[in-house]
Amino acid sequence: MIDLRLAAALGLSLLGLSLSAGSAFAFLAYVSNEKGNSISVIDTDKMETIATIKTGQRPRGIEVSRDGKLVYVALGDDDIIQVFDAKTFNSAGDLPSGPDPEQFTIDPAGKLLYVANENDAMVTVIDLQKRASVGEVSVGIEPEGMTVSPDSKTLICTSETTSMVHFIDTTSRQIVGNLLVGSRPRFSAYKADGSELWVSSEIGGDLAIIDPATRQLKQTVKFEIPGLRSEAIQPVGINITKDGKLGFIDLGPANRVAVVDGVTHAVLKYLLVGQRVWHGAFTPDEKYLVVANGVSNDVSVIDVAGLKVIKSIQVGELPWGVAFGAN
Image 1 (tube, one colour):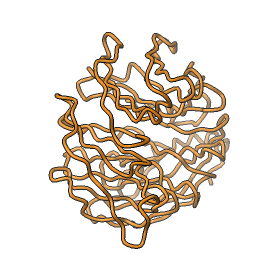
Image 2 (cartoon, helix red, strand yellow; image 1 turned 60 degrees about the vertical axis):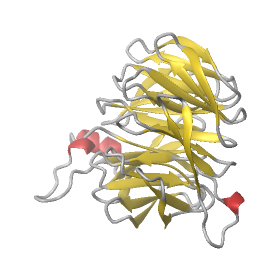
Image 3 (cartoon, helix red, strand yellow; image 1 turned 45 degrees about the horizontal axis):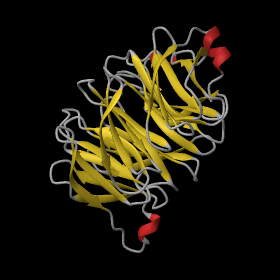
């Protein structure tokens, strides 16, 4: 563990670590620890936790600004988005999130942040430059999964109790479409080209493949793991490669990450990870996928090309989300 005060005194920039010739760039992963009230910082070159940042109460959703300078984390019990400097790890203020923020997403331009307020059936819109709320959208009960289309025109919000995907026009901030999916939809992700929207349903145990143009269901992907009851397979996090060829679905208490073919949507493989895998993120070069295992208090590092787990790294208590800085 690096002593941050010593590092500052020596003028050490953790994002500017000088690596030996031929070594990969040391990307930093930020892992929110829901019960630990902290963020673990992982150096993916060293494959170890190098620092711990103390946060407010119940950090869950976590993202890095588009320019890589700031880390945003949703504090569910403090009703704010806490902001940290990604280089020094010092506090950089708060954002007014609305009550009980869980997941949030940043628009492609990096100007707006959309927050799901779980207990308020509301989405809060935050202007990142003004650091102020500039709008609200009423949605279904227990909103959670948030993503913005690659063209920035549509905001997606999934409502867990309503079992619904809401399509929100980002200009008018009005719901322009709804689609029923499997029970308790937890997460949503677009393909980079905007051709498909994937939504995981935790209790339904499946993955919805949606055509964003028609807002209709194209296909439902089911997961079956020998030796496990269907109720133990609970899809949550989704990560899709930029080329759209592979998707990785975190299956909660099944302790597996499913690898899904991005074209045929066939399940190619199940990767055994830690206990209750929750959410994950790719390194910016997509060499690795890092997923948070809530019960085993660690993250699993997946070699994307090799489709295998290569490392387990201890973090804080009840890790929830993972985010990476800019390349």
